[in-house]
Length: 129
Image (cartoon, rainbow, N blue to C red; front, top):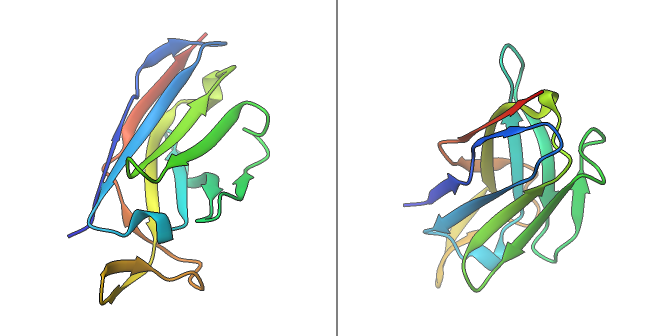
C-alpha cells in the first residue's frame, strides 16, 4: 500500500527555518506530482506548494520566496524548506501524492489527474513570536 510519512516538524521562533521531509513508499515516486498542504488552528486545509514529476513548482502567494519545495527521486522523498517563518505558518503540514493506477511495473501516478489521493499523517509546525 501507499505510505507517506512526514517528519521535521518542530517549534521555532519567528524568523527561523525548518525543513520538512516526506518519505514515500508503494508508488513509482518519479511518476508522481506531489504537494504540501497545511491546516492551521481553526482554519481549512490549504495548498502550500506543489511539484510536478518534471520538477515544475508552484507556491501559494503567502509562502512564495520563503518556502522551497523539492524532491529526490532516488530517495523517494519530498522536501519543504521553510525560511523566514512567521507565526501564521503555524499548522499541521501534510504531504500528498497524485492519484495513481496500477501498471505492469507498479503503482504509477496519473499525470492527467488533478487529485491528490494519498496523504501522510501530518507533522506539526509551531512558530512563536
